[in-house]
Amino acid sequence: MHGRIDREHGADGTQSHRAQAGPARLEVIGIEGLPEVRPGDDLTALLAAHLHGTLQDGDVLCISTKIISKAAGLVVPPEQKDAAVREQAVRTVARRRHGTVVTSIVQLAHGPVMAAAGIDSSNAPDGLLLLPEDPDACARQIRSALQDATGCALAVILTDTSSRIWRHGVGDIALGAAGLASLQDLRGTADSQGRRMAVTVRNLADELAAAADLVKGKTAGIPAAIIRGAEHALAEPGVPASALSRTGPDDWFRRPSLESVWQALGLRLEDEPVAAMDPEPAPDRVEQAIQVALRTRHEAEQIGDIHVEHAHCSRDHDGEHVSDVERSSVVNPEPLLRRDGMELYVLPGADTPRGWARAGALVERLRTALAAEAIADDDPALRAIRIHLEAPCPRKHPEENAR
Image (cartoon, rainbow, N blue to C red; front, side, top):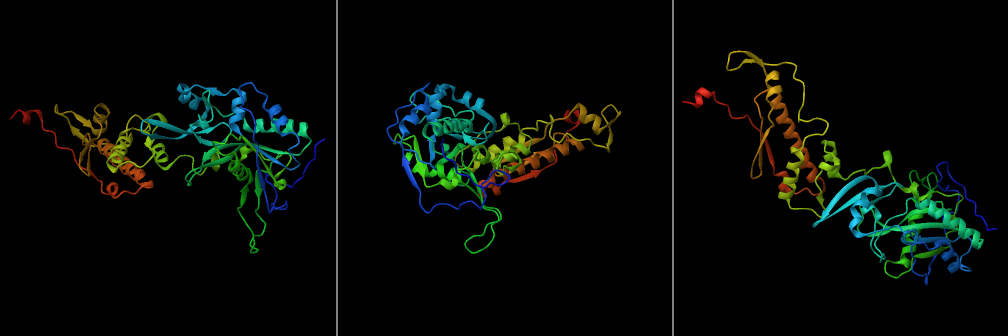
């Protein structure tokens, strides 16, 4: 029978601040000598045999998700990568272009947002590796089997490499967790100056995953590590890693600035351009903004599709009374856009209330699309663009043209 370490938890599953704050020292031990994992291998049995006599009560075992994927045979050929990304994704957050390569940043079913759905080719000699469908379930299964085999109370973290918003570089995060107080709630406890903390919730799972990666590395062939001295982080049943992802209403960064504006302008995902990974020259960004503005909202076929209540009546060439509303319902040309250097000129397609409304809508779409381009990089060349709304040239009567 293996031991058990009890900890107090909040209503949301986070570890209470009344639990031990943390150790003064941690030891991180890389697990060397594990054989190359192949599809169909019993990974739990392999780990149990290799770690026999090594594990202790309170250890946190961090395992690279790659070897989970290898054992499960989650491998696809490189030419199927794009299809695999679409299949793994529950939504597309953004797409970025680097040369001719387009990378999709997507949200996975178990919560995290990752580039290319976390599909990876490094340390994968047989093809591209997919992430397991439910990393938390994998972590629970491995933990249960290892505790039964060793008699030790453990926590298990499945780790993978990811980038973070506002930070350069990559680091390991927890994709799966079992037996771990993944979140430590410090709200209500006092800091070193005696002030009560109001919002601090520590992400212990990611911190431990990153610590393990310092000895696992990316090229050393060490797919697992033991963290010793973190007994305070163990919990039963613990908080799954899926609870670490901000999704739904809690997602502050559901889409990047460009894509958020494009979506607000009514573009469907398939109609959105693919922005470059690195900032492009201002002329390219101006052209992209123009193309975005010219694409109509998918909710309506036409820009500025409005109802004009007060129609102005006039006579047509045959002397009949025809309202502008009736005329525009038959002839409803698009606004005209003319570019002269840094000046953009929008002209109504028809000198009618509807025509002017549609032209005005295009002016505002242009302004909005250009402003979106300037959010991340406020290039003076973008601010120099001027947009003018001009009256169309008067159309001559056919008899006047004949003179």
